[in-house]
Length: 434
Image (cartoon, rainbow, N blue to C red):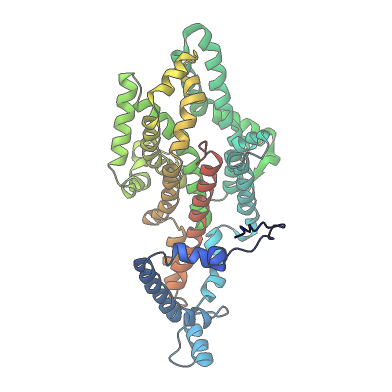
């Protein structure tokens, strides 16, 4: 009996994987039909989506984009698709899209908010993307003054004097610090900035306006603002200022100084215990009562301040949660390196706390941007306020879904973009290797 062994002399060429193990089939098997319950839920969900599309598709397919009124839309739909047909009247969007974007801003000056939006993207680029040169941060710092000058008009001297106040405060801080310590230097810098703003900025701005008259644009009143321009102005400003203010409030609440801690806790708990609508009503009707007679405090500026303070209180609690999540060893490591308080916070503690808090921080930003629609309560014509104004027109009286659907779509695009960037930032800052 002979033992014959088989030895292969050549290797088999690689074969493609079974179709059920790759591509869409594998994804569907793992995500949609991995069990009996998941298969049942997939079938029910697919049936619900198909049923919804079957009812919604005719409404979109029979839509009208060119008409002068809702009645004209309905007549055109009836002529084309029958008396019982339904369809969307998107002609109202085509008729009022400029109003949705710019409110009642003068049409000959549309270039100013358009340029402001382009500059906003340029100012955000070095903050959001690490590939952009850091030198662009100087433009990001100067952007608020530039956009104020573009949107409200007037002389560029006023924003220049506002920025000069920060320079005065920094100069006083540096001069006082070496002699009297950091606390007195901080107090002196803040007082110098306030004195400049309240007593010196106005005369200096008037002098600069006389010397440089070519830096003056046609003024536009705040009551002409509206639409998505108003929402972006309030939302972007509130987001930009609530984050650093929230960081300071979070650090103040954890401070060992009783007075600072008490002030921060009182502010945070008071703001979190009061509805935003109440604060907006205070900004609109009551704030001027406490100001000196004859003071003209711009309504949009008042709203921005209240929205920023409201968001900062919630932001402070979000960041405090990130600080509390760090192990005690990180604080001890910063002490072991010989870092002072502010160096430890800037270089060791705060970067880690902010990374932990990214999802909640972006969630606060999204909530803030959506809450800008509440300004309709105080008669500012944001997109929701414009919808009410448009529906009051006899030509479009009775139209609902098209207007609110368009506003919802734009808000969804903006908020979803923030969510997508949040996920990108989490992946980029991820330090584990799971």
